[in-house]
Image 1: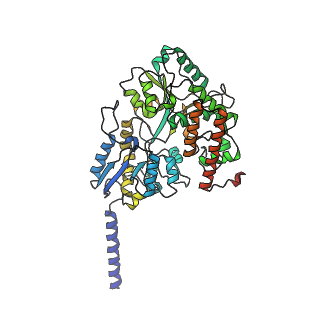
Image 2: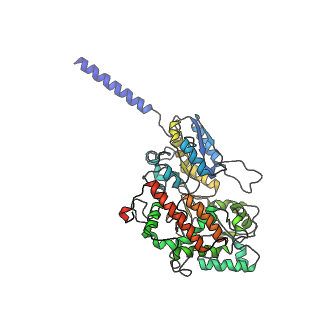
Image 3: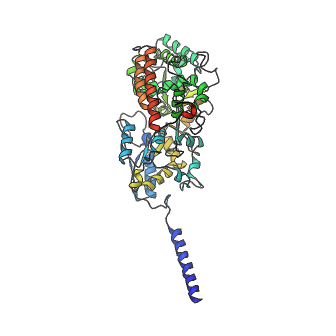
Length: 496
């Protein structure tokens, strides 16, 4: 009996000791976590730097404040911010991901992560998103601070989250209010009004109607395709959006590939050709020599008063506001909508709101590579992201850059952005609905090839028929390659 009693006391003592040790064990994350190592971080546009003589507006610097405060909380951690890569970043980061040499935290477009994550190159954030963020008082699950719509868009084909996303980007047309006032012009909402405004500015002869960066693949070509083609293709959205597991309400690349094989729409259709003709019509009002202009050159034409309008994004608000070269009043408008006043394929006025590209595709998109775990830096990386996304830190960081809208709950936009861009219900984020209407940039390879063809077509070097013929070949090749690489089986949809 005494032996049993002694064993019982010992057992209670041992269990009590274990409980005390467990209670004393330091947490993995938060201010009391024991973390160490040099954390390599690439913050894209949020990367801090000193102002140079060439800067016409203040560069971002708030990340240094976050770095200082974080290192004070965690003396064993040193944060190293990496500078922007001058070469093709996509190729650079993908090469390092495959080689196990990527930064512990790096910016990457969520669409890239949707491909890299399931291949085992990125850490799934889901286990951590289901934990409490210790840097946010009262938080029970980290994921609760993120907009549900953003999480839905970021989800990879395997259903997992590989990207931590905290901001939104939006695009539009900057315009010179003084020029509009001088010529008695109203801000156009629809395509026919837009062309009328442009023609009046051109007839006046004092200004370039619209500065245009024709050498920029994304802006001059990819953006333009979505702006001009989306109204024509939105009526087909339900015909494309047929794969239940492919983000209902959005048209994904897989659904576009299926649509192509089913012949829902072709490049030789009247609808597609009208989209090309609208772009050709608009090009009559662009900068002289626009095919050789980059974005900075097109911006300079606008900011110095030579051009009346300029297509750009929310990241350009701060420069436009603070640039000493600007001597005029300015405004912003969504891209005017093509309606049935222009073509029977577009909806009636008012059906589609003002057009803008954007959504969670800005600079606050961060991934953690699987190599971080092998290097013993995974917990440090996750903890820093938790700290970075806390509203008290994310808010000032996003406002300091002054380029994007926050998507983290509890963070308000900078007043300058809120006043100009953030008007809920006044426009549609095209990128979140039908990202590639007309198939032209269904893959990066196809986009590259079709951009070169577009330059030839828009520059009167090839006919519309030749343009259609060559783009058809590129899209067919791209779709076949996608199907083969991803082992997509469309047999249940009647496609062999």
